[in-house]
Image (cartoon, rainbow, N blue to C red; front, side):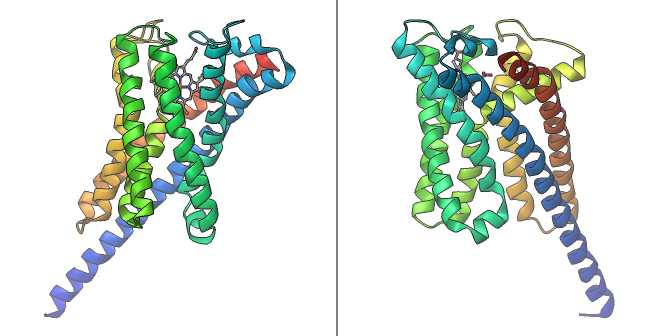
Length: 281
Ligand code: HEM
């Protein structure tokens, strides 16, 4: 190999390395933004759904503008609602910690137990959510409920595979399925962010209806987990690439995704969660 070839090989290796560094930076930045958004959502769920149980003022739950919400005397339906929403506070606080590399490396036991909690509660959330939607009737329209129904079914699949590969110690596959399980279990959260980001971009609704079955609502009800899952797959693909240009394309995609998350988190905190928390307190 002559010196020109050696030099151009070295340049291309360092171009790939720096693109991969930016790929990692875009993931880490997204995790920080998501952590703020998730913990805020967890606080909102705690104040709106756990607080009323402690104070006994259960009607407060309906401040969240639920579809059916708390109904006096409907013991079974109310139990289903609370067992669906209260674990969401734990899922929001605990789930994002699984994505922090230092926790996985240095505190393996925390990762294992927190992971078991996340997968178990996520699975229960999917089953109770399907019950609330299709048996209790907590849906604004049939077509508007299809996206979240597929979300619930996919949670069962992703949780099953994430668990199976962890037990088989096939950690690459475990990570891939666990990331998809994380995205799917947080479909409810992503939906709110995307909807809020959409409202911000359009200065109000556009293609949305009060029954959440307008064309944009239906698109978002599938896209809220479909888009993050596609971005996650692009990330796994980029990690295997040896050409800097391909990795940069994914960095760009992830940066756009990160900016949408940032706008959605800020809008959801300011327009949705803080006003409802203020009403409840
Ligand atoms: C494990 C994933 C899930 C989590 C963490 C979760 C979390 C939540 C939370 C926090 C709320 C209250 C929202 C608010 O106050 O803004 C909620 C409501 C609701 N969820 Fe889920 N959810 C999940 C999956 C599902 C699935 C898969 C379905 C349906 C197939 C579903 C159906 C519902 C329904 C119908 C309500 C409204 C109940 C009412 O207003 O009466 N959820 N969910």
